Image (cartoon, rainbow, N blue to C red):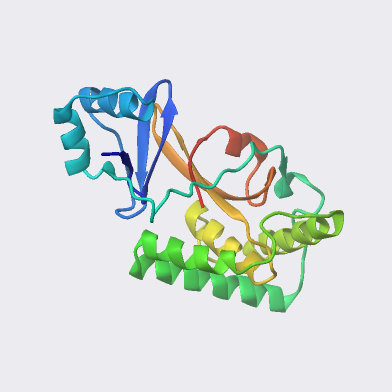
Length: 223
């Protein structure tokens, strides 16, 4: 019988250690040394004993692989450019853009307080799949994306709600989706001390963070 990582679970390796993100329960965690070693053997294709395999299944790390539900892990290239570091970073669109961004941030904050992260992510993913563009396909598309992302960043500065990477990334993704752009949200982690972060990205272009900060995190999941 074949086993695979549970759909809502993702992981990354930092210095040979596995860190997991569970979208369903909205938490990051690690395994104990023995169970982690068994998991790493499994994902490398090496056989593992029945006892640790059973524990990994009971802990809902692994699940039975089925052809009906293949994993579809998104990927993003390493960031090399950032809207925040380009000349378009703080455009002003007027009161209409400010109202739209404020409403989007407020609505997103309410969803984060009343809904599970899995439900929020699923709803966003459905919306993004309806967009015609996954990444900019021409100079005109990219110029418009830069313009719209810059407008969001500029308006967000005037919204009197404390900034938060998850809140702002979800809000920006919805803002851009209304304009036909399906972006990615990248979750990343740093170890020792542990820190988690996320940002919006389109191709190699970071839309709401700097290149240096984004690349200091190891990606653990891409939406």
